[in-house]
Image 1 (tube, rainbow, N blue to C red):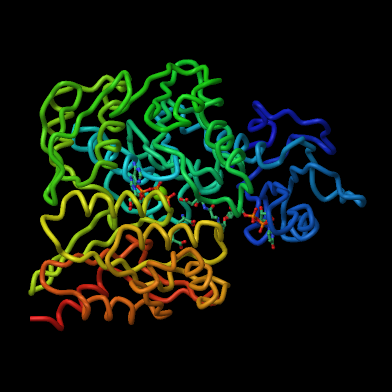
Image 2 (tube, rainbow, N blue to C red):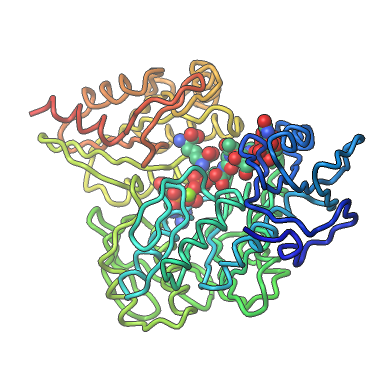
Length: 486
Ligand SMILES: CC(=O)N[C@H]1[C@@H](OP(=O)(O)OP(=O)(O)OC[C@H]2O[C@@H](n3ccc(=O)[nH]c3=O)[C@H](O)[C@@H]2O)O[C@H](CO)[C@@H](O)[C@@H]1O[C@H](C)C(=O)N[C@@H](C)C(=O)N[C@H](CCC(=O)O)C(=O)O
Ligand SMILES: Nc1ncnc2c1ncn2[C@@H]1O[C@H](COP(=O)(O)OP(=O)(O)OP(=O)(O)O)[C@@H](O)[C@H]1O
Ligand SMILES: N[C@H](CCC[C@H](N)C(=O)O)C(=O)O
Ligand SMILES: [Mg+2]
């Protein structure tokens, strides 16, 4: 319970109708969650305008409304506060409502197209192993010092996010490592948070359905660094062509990491095998359990962040060398007759190429690579043909199938993918709409030693078809098919 006047710090409001002396029991931007005593924030969304629900919110007991436009018939039943940007105000109000929890621990955000979950999860595991109580906000799950809280988004809405960070503070957490998605930056889900550091992984093709142009997508990522405070660190990947752009306008301490260019933190790959990576990292030779050149970047980003957070070099490297990554990322299983199955969350063209080039680097001979891949419905359509082409360019056989078709027709998504397959590669592709059948077919086509890559769904435990989610777990399905082999 808070007085409205106590949570207005940092909110530039243009008009206050009624007064700010009103007790607030909670905040929401969703009228369906309003209960008596709530502050309702009307946000203009991508599908509807939250201002439409002001009357409904008041009927359900909202005592105050934050909005960009005052409704024509303003009811006396609630206090009205006008702001230029409700979404931005929502972030700050949520932080204030929970007593600015992000300032009470060290909050580190990770952004980029690929690698956010891996880097945030490794940081969480590393700092836990170093003896700290930590929190994690990620696509796979959220965690508060070992307690798992299911995740609905990569970066939750500001009310949920600040509530989660407040629970971390109450549990005594010293650090919180969180993913910062481009949607979250564009929708101001992180507004009002006090970051101690920001990390950039890379920027490649994704989410153009939402951001429309690559430039807008880049600007959303960059805005995260533009907003970091002076005392934070901003750590970027200089091998990415947009790595330096990210830090152009930040006030934070600029730091960099790279494999190929001069940077503050450097790594060299000495060996890249199925059982791990041997790296020369900051002049030390260390074996890591994680596989693939892209994980050398992830490990280096984590190591550099630990150094910037004043951790001991030797202890950090010892601990990092023992860690495995996030669930469903280059997760591999072997059948009784030695077919290798790899479950990976690659759902962008760059990630598909990275995971397949890693397989090529680490495989020992002429084993066939069979890739099973689909593309999500209600998401960036332009990546579909590119992902199919990339899969074909790097595999011996490709089965095009469904990922999460969501509201779209699964067969049409596959057609969009087929359009990217070069005529010379058509012979090696088959299209099977049912993902379970696709997995079964791949297992039947594989010989001992062959490698099946099951791309796109990683840790996900569901498949969403025609808006209905049913249980589906790639690893479970693969193991089920492996059981039929001897
Ligand atoms: C496209 C997108 O990002 N949508 C997010 C956005 O919703 P929106 O702008 O579409 O909201 P809207 O439906 O237009 O409604 C506008 C406002 O009216 C309110 N409303 C709506 C209906 C009603 O009856 N009453 C009411 O008050 C809504 O609560 C909202 O405040 O804001 C909502 C609240 O924060 C999010 O839950 C929602 O995520 C949807 C479910 C989603 O699927 N988002 C994905 C694309 C996403 O955010 N992904 C990123 C990155 C993924 C990654 O690469 O890792 C993530 O961070 O998860
Ligand atoms: N540093 C990296 N560079 C390129 N590809 C990577 C990198 N790290 C991971 N990948 C690939 O991208 C996939 C997704 O990795 P991860 O879940 O860590 O990324 P993410 O940024 O959190 O994705 P999302 O935006 O969906 O949450 C992995 O399964 C792997 O194929
Ligand atoms: N967080 C990403 C994940 C995509 C994973 C893939 N399985 C899909 O459903 O497209 C998104 O919402 O775009
Ligand atoms: Mg993620």
